[in-house]
Image (cartoon, rainbow, N blue to C red; front, top):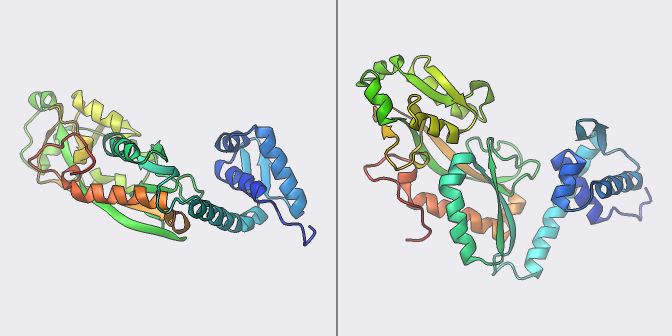
Length: 312
């Protein structure tokens, strides 16, 4: 490469999106261009740098060692470009742009989506891409700007805070309880059916909370996501462990053996460079303030979980 010929930032942006998506079609959707344009830009960048950045296969594009070496430099340029754009456009006082937020499925449906609707009504120039995933968002490949997760990153540069500690507690439908032996102690649970996660598809080891029962539960129906588990338990399939925010307040599920619970924590994380952006911090702060103000979403109380509203 000619020492005086530097890669164009736009080519590096194509490089970043292909590295994150892993396929031409995925990168083209994120960049809103034809997949042939992505391929052409990558070919040009490799020719300019005189090296191969991706291994091509039928499965997709995977970074070579040289590509891995370029990645942090391209991300640093992206961060500087985002920060400069935000500052120059006055976004330090007006929240503008798009924020990609990764959230577990049921938490997104019951808590975050209604909350984002209220927030967006107050910020007409802000948009949110809510990644409702059966797993936790991959912040390392910039799949999301910030994410709610059970296992925060342990390496890399991230801002991390505990969003909430929640209790997984036992619930069952009144119909199930009426047709099965009474539950007075934890030992009685061994005679009952359970609804749980598919054990070899857990998004995190933290979801393996039924091990705390002290025996191997009789799992009659397992689902990869909690929304299906809730519906199955509400239909009378068996007992379920769930946090209060996940349980509908229509009487289809009622608490069982309230002294038994498993405690877990949700963490909020964002790459340090993205956390500096005003729009990312606005979403971050709203999630924190909302979680702190509504402990009944996370710990069972005598009060039912009310319809969600932003503000007092």
